[in-house]
Length: 138
Image (cartoon, rainbow, N blue to C red; front, side):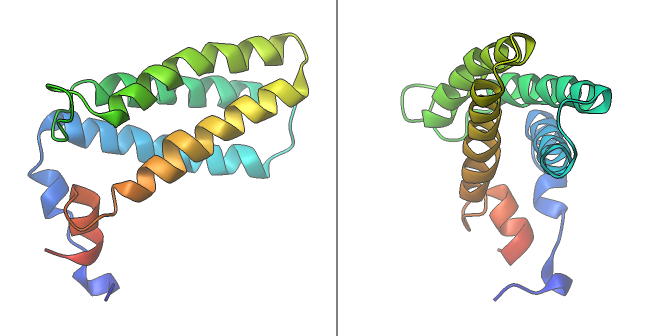
């Protein structure tokens, strides 16, 4: 059972620095993504926050390459493939925006937000993972 008084940041604070930085960047990208989704699109502010979000996503994907807790193929796992995919799709999303291809930009960025942050983030809530231990104890 999840209780607010059971939340402890100790698992994250005891984790390697690469994991701490990755988690902070991912949470920042998630929160900024929520703000972007709620705001009016196409404004200067949207573009500025969008470039900030892209920078955070690059940092999230790049920092994941320093994390090797899930080892499916040597030091790497499916999450590393998602990171490579993310790094390839971010420039495409920017390209679509610059070409005023709103549909392509929207699909790319929403796909990255939900795939690389929401869905991948949900897996970090498993009891065996650091965020799972923060939220549910253990």
